[in-house]
Length: 126
Image 1 (cartoon, helix red, strand yellow):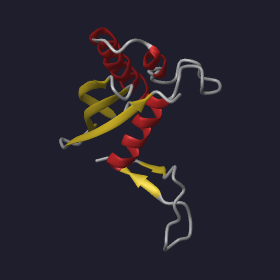
Image 2: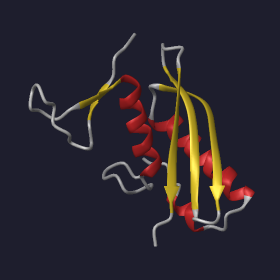
Image 3: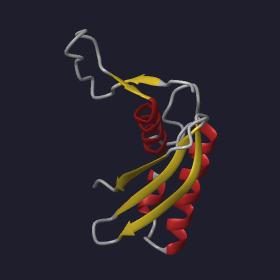
Image 4: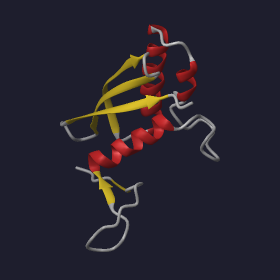
């Protein structure tokens, strides 16, 4: 089974080596998914198509149609930009009182049968 690793974007210090800590396997892939979902198309230099582009939907009225568009945009972005994953389910739950969405993602890392579940909160900031 392949091992994946990325640096910890919180830049916490490894107590043993003194270097930046790393995230491995499921945590590394999950961090990558969060970055993809939170990146707007055109925000990454030299790759204008990269990103989930879901923030533009935050300013649309919270309707079932907008929720389905968000689910589709997130699923498409993960499939396009995170080749290490196999998506099992993306579910978006709107909260119109706080103008936010809760995104539940269930995925597997390739060659690993164990599913990984995570929730991402996407909120409109005024």
